[in-house]
Length: 229
Image (cartoon, rainbow, N blue to C red; front, side):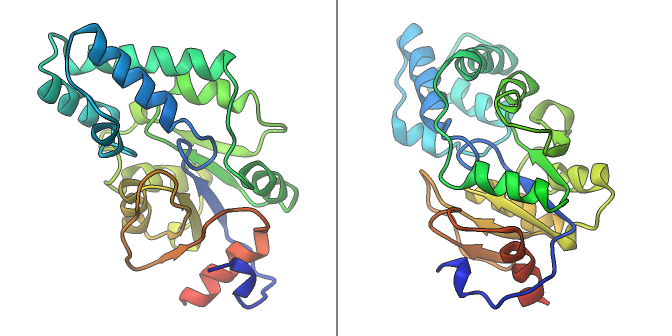
């Protein structure tokens, strides 16, 4: 569907909570390349499908699965450090592929005075160089994977972001691209605008699916909340 089909409204969300990987920037291929490089280094087997199964997951949870499947002689923490280092280096110097409409919507929300937070299972070392490439200072809170005790799909990341902004998660829109992240946001009480990227996302309550963020504005997100009342 297109959000232009949603009835007009002057209501705005109390906040918009953004996923990062695959939602604002198309980093999933970068993560996959780092995983394949790690597998090659240790003569292990790993595929694109293996990587896609872990999209959106807490990094330590994902690294434990990689250790098991690849039989790596590394601790889960060492695996995370290796992958985060490679992805962070790319984010600092490589060409970032922005997801269609994401930067425009971030800017429009900032201009409209809508608080925003970044809610990602990536670590600060990855989020920081990305934030440096976004104009202005749109994010009033940044929740990364290493600051929560339970990552997505648990609701803690989104509850933490809403609390940091001082807003009710039920009056927030989360923007996600994965089932793992969508479950987290919906469990926290947010309405989730799902923009699938590399993986299919399951249907469920408090979810609206779109093909792209292009043409989406702040009032469209407010309409989602009004329609879900």
